[in-house]
Image (cartoon, helix red, strand yellow):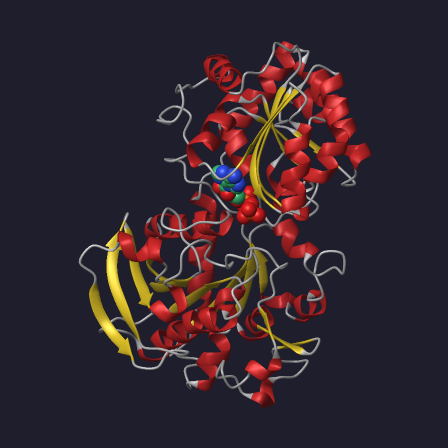
Length: 475
Ligand code: ADP
């Protein structure tokens, strides 16, 4: 089985969030299932720099405003196809945002180019290689089925679109129709039109053979108006082809027993050295309560404004907090202000090594998201015996077993969940956390249960492989 994964980011080369982790992990996870996966990526500077002796496999004299080459290379075990199109991708800074902090104005064209090349490979193959499946990720690859249709490629290759976050629609003004090589007659409510604009995501939702998202609960939530972000009707219409497959984590990179960024450990007790190191790193005073952590993008989705309001409960109970994150200016500012409290340490920025030290050193990891397609940091928390406290939504609902009296009694609890996603409910959960932390035996049981929970790719890789098999066109 030959699969082309089509994405705008891929760890370890280029990452802004969980999408990159998943795209980077899938090839190895699927190889174990007999699937050969190549990954098609834009040639951002960080990607181009990582290519050693790439092979030019095709040229494009006119790709959305300039000439381009398609390069093949193996990097970090990934079999990459890279679009070398300097006019679209050779820019410093963020891969999505210009220096003014806003989307690059030509983002529609930039990722249309990604989708266009993917559709071409799906239709005609490349350099003697053919894909059975195009596995498209998020809006950046949403136009693939549309272009495939235009190229007469529909039915030659199966298409799957995975929704990592339905909040990002990939919108463009309709005056870009020709520039994006789209057919105006498909600009309808049944097609890629969304409230008077072109939506690359919607094109994928209506056009792909199969849709997946990254947890079963998020799959169900997407069909509701509270979570569907205006696309719930489309999701309901396509209910029969939607499935939820939970993300795994990279168990080599996130392994407390071998992690080079920390003092390695195998049991909750041996984790304490990391706790001491983290407290020293952030100069935290002695405190009797749990040391909590957040590693997150700072956006409204993540509910960290609610956490700001709930902090008095945590600090009042002797707890402490370390936050690592970056994102919206107002949240960065509010968290910097919160750090005036000596029990609250805040690092604004993006730091992979520090994220490992924090997850290893903290007692609990907090994920109070308003919505969360899957979430990865609670999975890291489970693996590291860092008890997750999470909102009851999306993948957070699917991966944590809350410490209810019943779950504690039968010994299956791994963390805490709260609902609704409000300051009050979060404060209640933090208070409950402090109660549990004050009972060393119960606390250690929670940590041990957490560390035993499988969080790898095994079952999900099997689910993807079965889905690919089911989606291959009968040629
Ligand atoms: P999302 O994709 O919505 O950002 P996820 O939980 O799925 O949320 O994935 C976030 C990923 O990005 C995780 O691997 C997390 O550790 C990482 N991450 C987020 N913010 C930071 C940061 N400031 N520094 C280091 N890693 C971060």
